[in-house]
Length: 319
Image 1: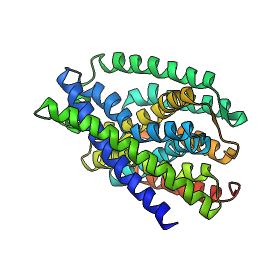
Image 2 (image 1 turned 30 degrees about the horizontal axis):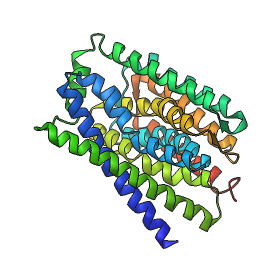
Image 3 (image 1 turned 180 degrees about the vertical axis):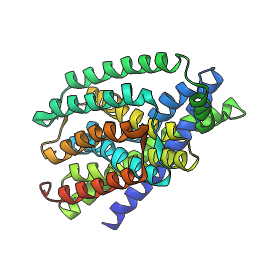
Image 4 (image 1 turned 30 degrees about the vertical axis):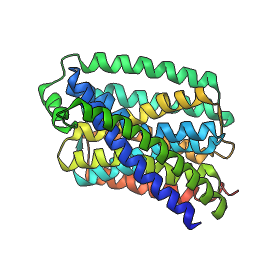
């Protein structure tokens, strides 16, 4: 049991450190290629912070551990909104850009509804995954076009301040990029190995571990990015990173991992899927009220996450 927690700790350290190096190197390379700070922030940084979820879910799918693969994505989307947005809003009220309210948050809600519908049989087929993968390509093209359509100078400057600065030498970018990717892969394997051992030792399903410990652990990059952005009073980054990551979690992670191997999680409950959908829908009215998420609303989201944990652990998921 102690060894299993050791594997989890090692996995969390490696995945967090690997993601940090990977994102910084990718952002630096994109800046060298002349990509705008806004596009880097909405794509490279927002989606790069989802790299731990991608590697963990892909490895779990290859190991026929669909509960971990699906639970990781669903749990991460819940944790991102309820815990990370809630905490960031407590640090500093988050002003929400109108584009997020009109376009990106509704897209996130629509994808959440689609995912719930596709998981009615607790299975994600290759056809379902292919649909998500095509959606990821379409959304990426859409993001580049809309981000490049004359963004305000204020928003552009905010993303420029919040993005990782380019490194002096391209050789360092290459080393960090490859090293970060290697750390992500090794760390993800350690995390999955430890999580499965813990699940068996405490007699709960792998899905519960994926929804909680792994989901929170792989969301550490989003937590760090959004909390630091809140401290620096960079609200567009704090909320944009979360919405972008949640969209990529569904389209990119389930799209790629599901194409590699179809996933089945029979003990995924309606509480889990319902919580993901409720928090996604709830974010829209919270963001629309004054175009900001206030401190009391952040506290409300955190209380909602605690309630979700109380409802789902471990009732209904015991092995």
